[in-house]
Image (tube, rainbow, N blue to C red):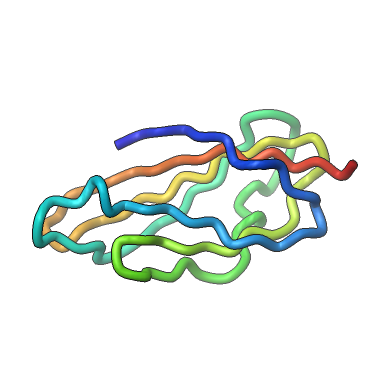
Length: 102
């Protein structure tokens, strides 16, 4: 399942927790087994977009939680969360995060 939704902008100094809810995409009885997060720049120039990830993603039932920090002013990032299920399915949720210093 792919669904690029734009989150509200964050300041480069803020640290926020991003949430990805895989519940609606899971088959009955299936659970998330592992996570992988991928960050790319969709607007602006950032040579190290993966640096946006702060720490390691946590599994909380059907939800993935990942802290996000930093980012460059006037850049927008695509944060993709790939969840592999116990049944071997690969589910993908993606969000766009603008970073603005205002």
